[in-house]
Image (cartoon, rainbow over all chains, first blue to last red; front, side, top):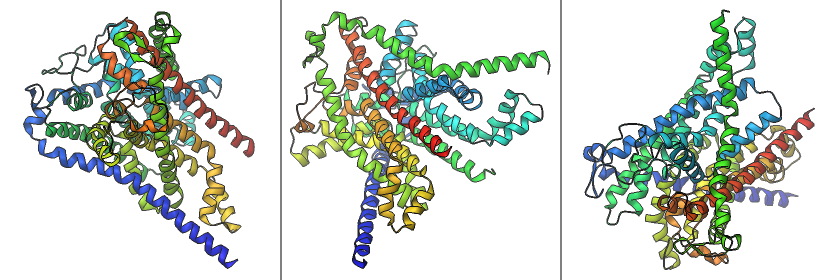
Length: 286
Length: 298
């Protein structure tokens, strides 16, 4: 009996160590990737690189048009995806009856989340660029990216809305507020941090994606800033792809510098989102 | 309440309801558009040559088997990495790790989930491929293996977060009961907690697989893009090309309405249907699980 328990304890110790090692093997490369790019990209960063235009076949100068392009795309995505996503989440959390149709909506959201990003690119090309004749433009790209972002925003917002206690709704309705007044004045403000987190995480995905913008927005080389939503634009992720695969003799410093700017752009969104979430959790009184 | 208020309320409610149905509309529209642009390919290229093993669009060879094969071999490789590491990390985070380690580790997993795939592909080209070439003495490091390793990494955050949720959802009383009859924590994890969470864990794996199949930029950058039908596991060490990479690499250069254009949309249909099957299966597991719980509780 004693030896069997000894054996079991040893089994547990080995097992636990194994899982610990595996987890750290998962984490360490992630930290490694971030640190590696920060270190190798940092020497490229200066004012001219950030705020300058590409010169000499993109082998010199800066990446300003790509930074601006990614900003515009992110904002454009927000314009379409945020109202629609929050609206859909409000429907699912506050209005939807528990029936087959609602289940179908949920299945559709799960499927939308799973569709490969390049297929969104195909759809955007077919519908927005060619059929609706927006051309390769910020508008076409933003619409494509917002459909892709929608499931993230819907599911995180719904979770935030559902975490508001039922009593809040009951009290508000019993005071004579309408359903929308309750949502607008009571539930949305309470759920705001959770919604913001979801929105930013969704937009973070949009900002970093390349495949959906390949045929809908991205310009290989366009050394001026877009002047209307119907202009094509450079974008950071696509620019990194271009200079690391399509341009021979590209200085490695510029490649790492571009990767660094993209990474910082995306990671700062991630950090803002997670900070909002953890602050709200700490402050929550219910 | 005056009239304008009622009107306001009505409009808002209408918007919310339409937004609610938007996901169905979009999935439907995506499928219809893919069909409209993809099905003409079947008329223009006969089925036999579509399912041949030669992809060489310039000379009108549109065999998509090598591309399907490329996706399969890379995905299988990715599963071998993402499942043990993903589930292992989820079990560690949910059952073993002290609270502070968990708080420290979870943001890293989230960061990995948010890393742009083009950045991973970039590092894969510059670091992973040369490393694999030297290590395994290959003619090129741009191989299916490099793609599998990176895709495994990309699938891990999905697997970890879904599996961890599933493990967290197992009632504490299950664990307590198991420990009370003398099982070690290790035995409890393997014989009680994991089996109780198995459908959630299965969903995690399915969604991870879906993520791997759909990934585009990373595989396009690190797998060498040779459309050669993989014949066995040894082809992990040679270049391959996936369905996603083919669309991404070639769609920019084809004339809209050409045979090549329609065939690329046809590949899009295949990808769409695969993701549909994967995700419906995954969500069916979740729905069934919910029903079973309700039955037990009532």
